[in-house]
Length: 130
Image 1: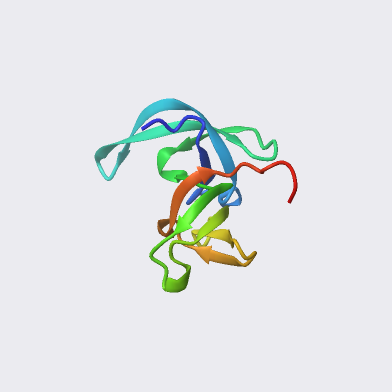
Image 2: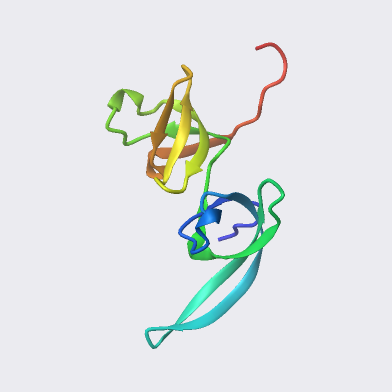
């Protein structure tokens, strides 16, 4: 799976201050082997360009969560069934609660799990009247 250029959110890091930071995958660095409980475990690492000029960091694959921030998404599987199949703009992922802040077409904001959003299209701000 090619993650290069994908938008990600950092999650479950020991350096907790970085959790929730967004970034873009620059490249796959490679695999390192570590020993956990006497077993060899392979860890894949990626170079991430962090937002807001926070530089680049080597991050383990397990700490990357691919996000759809800035995309148009369709809502599905919600308890509020009237909202299912609604198209919304996907906002930031809250790394603590693992919920997206999505904006509905009527302007309301709701929090939804990543499993409840289906990618439709990259959001392009339309020019012209509006």
